[in-house]
Image 1 (cartoon, helix red, strand yellow):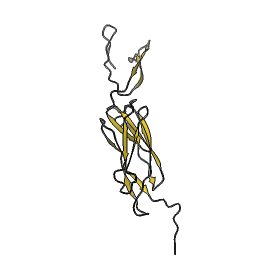
Image 2 (cartoon, one colour):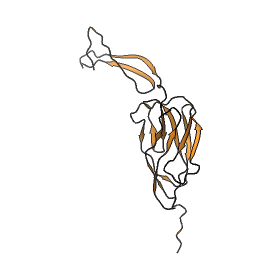
Image 3 (cartoon, rainbow, N blue to C red):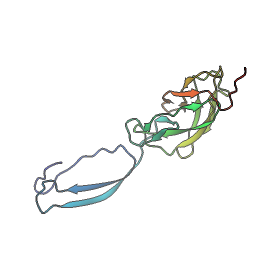
Image 4 (tube, rainbow, N blue to C red):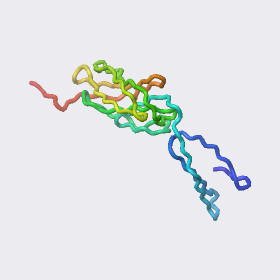
Length: 173
């Protein structure tokens, strides 16, 4: 809210989210007549790409959000593949339409074979298939997924839990 001087005022805005932004001015003094004015739209583009970002199942990418996403990674099951989405973003986590070659690893999976996947992003993102493995069949482990590309800040996902696959476990007596 800002008072008018001689019927006008100036607002300085800083946009963090790419997209189309609309402005609205509303009379806030609660005295009739009340006025509302709709301004024209402003197209806001993503800034220069600087970051890699990993989105795991349970997380949702949110352009312009301070963390770039919401949610928390879901628990995964050993050897059951899941999708991790890798995005190239600006400093405010807006997806950038670029195509760098990205290497994705699971750095704390000692049995991960192959140890990495390298693919190029398409329109700023790409889905990678992750199949977590673990040593002892019934161990519960924590994992991360890391994305790296030349010229970008690398990104390591939050830890997520990988549990044994008990769907085919048999008890022998």
